[in-house]
Amino acid sequence: VSYSQMTYAQRGEQHSHPLVKQLFATMERKKSNLSLAADVSTKAELLGLADKVGPYVCVFKTHVDVISDFDSDLVDQLAALAAKHDFLIFEDRKFADIGNTVKLQYGGGMYRIADWAHITNCHVIPGEGIIQGLAEVGMPKGRGLLLLAEMSSKGMLATGAYTEKNVDMAIANEFVIGFIGSRRFTEERDLITMTPGVGLHASGDALGQQYRTPEMIVTENGSDIIIVGRGIYGAGKDPIAEAQRYREAGWNAYLKRLAQ
Ligand code: S5P
Image (cartoon, rainbow, N blue to C red; front, side, top):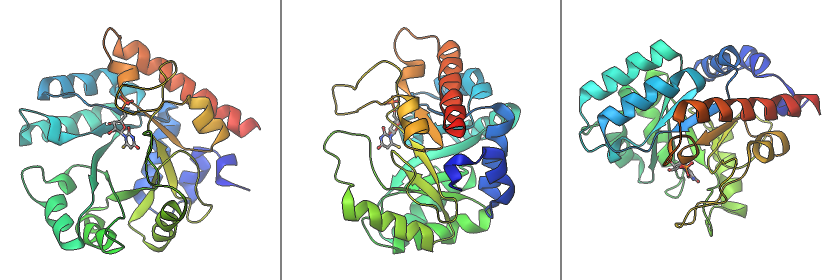
């Protein structure tokens, strides 16, 4: 039986990676396969969003390098909100350099990402060394890595043989817990997929983003988690109401998949 036919709870029980076990348990507890892409530019906005939308998401996704007033207190407060509302933190850093450099970028600098982000991600353009470098920092801390096997934007180059290489590298490296992409990629090791470019209404933006519905992504394509940003906090929106709506849409798409 395919993993896409199993419940998140069942998959959590049999998964070998403690972080993924925790993720699936959280998803089941909160009945949420929704991740918020919190692309706001100040500390106050980021923490405000985490406190408001936190109850409805399993994963809170950040881009800390767009926060104009970043400081270490921000990550302390974000970690406290993660405990309060029961979500994991994913820093969407998209590392893309050689192993030695990404080790420095992941563990050090002013952001010290490995100290607070449960999940991060990378491109495999540099070859397998990037995974090994990140693993040296993240594995001892119990973190997990996603590979960008595909992207959501118009004209993206991660296709065909490149996507397949991502899948091979993910299977071979314990630190990898899954992918960013549009679908389930493999039945090996129950590697998860998180999908950005999800929207109930909009079809895209002026800079190449393309949106598909939760049903296309979760029910039809077998992805595990939907990532939604501007659909929840965009201009004129009520983030709590939209988060509830996307949570319900994502969860119903999952229930529909199980019933197929
Ligand atoms: O292929 C990708 C990969 C990612 S991680 N396409 C994406 O859009 N993302 C991220 O998902 C992007 O950096 C942003 O944070 C989020 C999508 O935001 P939205 O406002 O378009 O929903």
